[in-house]
Structure formats: structure tokens, C-alpha cells
Image 1 (spheres, rainbow, N blue to C red):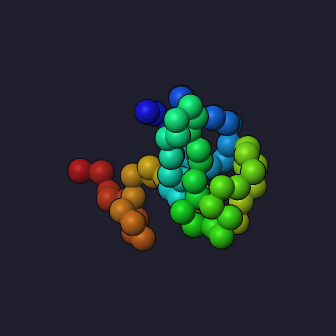
Image 2: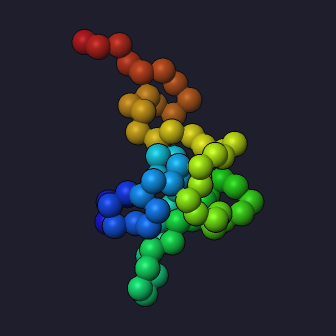
Length: 68
Ligand code: SF4
């Protein structure tokens, strides 16, 4: 399953966040947050203090490697 395609609320901020976990159910997919106290925030999320972009190309806690 690809994020933002089959998952609900494709316009939610969560789909661009590294704290999102997609949890498949019997008939639907749930958006679980691994960072906030509220594990299943009301969707779609528009603003979030815990938002952390995913897939930045940079190593965790580091900077992007210079081009070679
Ligand atoms: S930290 Fe915020 S934006 Fe990220 S998955 Fe959790 S609720 Fe969504």
C-alpha cells in the first residue's frame, strides 16, 4: 500500500510525516501516530507540533551528503 494513494485523507499532513504508521483494518486503513499522545488524531490533520518531514534524503539527525 502506498501512502497517500490507498490510505484515507490523502491531503492530511500526516502523510508527509515520518511518525505516521498505516494500520490496515478489515475494511479500512487507519492513520496511527507514533509520536503524539493521541494515537489516532482526528483527520485530516492540518497543523501539528510534532510534524517531522519524511524522506528528506538526509540521515537521521544529520545533513544531506554533498553531491559527488
Ligand atoms: S506527529 Fe502529527 S503530523 Fe506526524 S503523524 Fe503524528 S499527528 Fe500526524
